[in-house]
Image 1 (cartoon, rainbow, N blue to C red):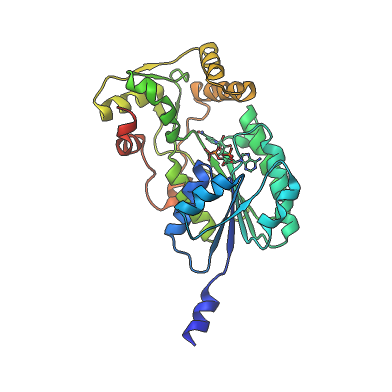
Image 2: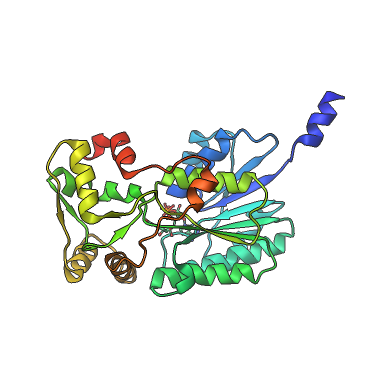
Amino acid sequence: MLKTLWKKMMKNETILIIGAAGNNGAATIKSLINKQLPGTKIRAAVRNKEQALMLSTKFPCIETVKIDLDKAETLTAAFKDADKVFMIPGNVEQRELHTKNAVDAAVAAGSVKQFVFFSVVGAEYEAILFAKQFRAGEKYLEKSGLNWTHLRTIFFQDNFFGWADGIKQGALYFGVREGRFAPLNIADIGEIAANILATAGHDNKAYNVTGPELLSGQDMATVFANVTGKEVAYVSPTPEQTLESLLSTGWPQWQAEGMLELFEVFATDQAAIVSPDGEMLLGRPLTTLNSFITANKGAFV
Ligand SMILES: NC(=O)c1ccc[n+]([C@@H]2O[C@H](COP(=O)([O-])OP(=O)(O)OC[C@H]3O[C@@H](n4cnc5c(N)ncnc54)[C@H](OP(=O)(O)O)[C@@H]3O)[C@@H](O)[C@H]2O)c1
């Protein structure tokens, strides 16, 4: 009797994560598992065997499935009987095509009740390349007839791991001049995504999720200096220097130019907002840059 009742209470849902092996995908899976949702299956869509093995070693309770978002025909098995989808487009020029293929597969599956789309703050203005790419995906999803949720995010605190060498040598090179924005923690994003996927009331909504505090490049350098106890000077290279530096470290031209556009948005305070959505969805304060650096101090000293 109790067993039958429990079974009835169990949702038996399948949540499909696209981009599962990436930073935000793994953070979301971790948070979903922490929630211990009875009867919920997590299906992680990845590109290759190595990623499947990496995820199933880390999270033994999940299913993995192989997809290639460039090839629509590879998506059918992944979407079969999926109830909810969280799509995190990759760092690729064809983000729009990938989203279109995923949305089409979700519609074709016929089982998807909620499609959560990872996007960017300011997408709706379509002012820069990255915003245009994500907004194109948002629009396609909105017209699909699926219940959609846009999870719009901003520059990750975790990006600073890529600046660690400069910081260790005493400088934060970040070409955003005196502009301010609110960097966001990836673990927070994962928890927010998991909360959206695990609760009702998010249909056809766009959330702007920023970090908890507006900081300039100088403010960020000061936080690094305070936490590491070492001098960290703030240097804002010119756009030309930033472009040269990105290209010399292997960034593709389209992406390096996109980054310059984004830095200009930051430099001119066009993204200088602290949105209440993140804290509301998280149910606790968002992680500050100081807490993030403190927790990862070893990487910066
Ligand atoms: N860095 C920031 O501050 C920031 C802020 C806002 C938004 N974003 C954007 O937000 C998105 C998520 O960020 P993230 O750090 O979680 O990205 P990520 O770690 O690169 O994860 C994206 C995942 O998508 C997968 N992918 C790429 N092409 C694919 C394909 N053809 N088929 C199947 N999977 C494919 C990647 O696989 P592989 O590992 O095999 O490539 C990767 O696992 C990215 O588009 C990022 O550019 C970044």
